[in-house]
Length: 193
Image 1: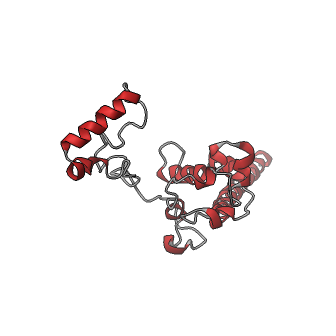
Image 2 (image 1 turned 60 degrees about the horizontal axis):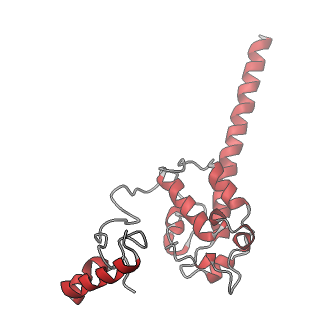
Image 3 (image 1 turned 180 degrees about the vertical axis):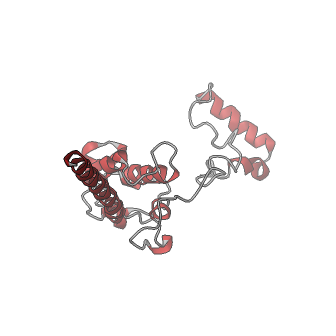
């Protein structure tokens, strides 16, 4: 169907009389407009709800260690490959995301993990840091089986994303531990003097 992507243009394609008929038909089953608002009739404008809207920015977390195909050395661009199709939420075929199949919690799906990574890079709902506990917890149950790389229509490879994130996560943690040891050593030395 046309759904949201072309909803604003349907009046040009079908004319105002037919779109009004669509609206009346939908109102019979959904008089309060709660089911799929903004789809087909009374559609959102084309330039709303964009993944890369005016607030979009490239992360300041720096380049990735791995190369992610067309995304280059950018885990952010690689995670943004997820188009939200939801193939990873299905359990009728393929090997897609065994951890989601067990927990049924979207944060343990490929889509949920990719969304969380994207949110981390934007820094709005999840802090923009490689020390993100939320992201680490979501990636914790990823088995790195590469089922997503095979079954996902946009070839999201969560095993590679997890390896990249954990590389930075533990590098940041080891720096943090090193700072703490240095601080303790300096304060111990000050107490001896």
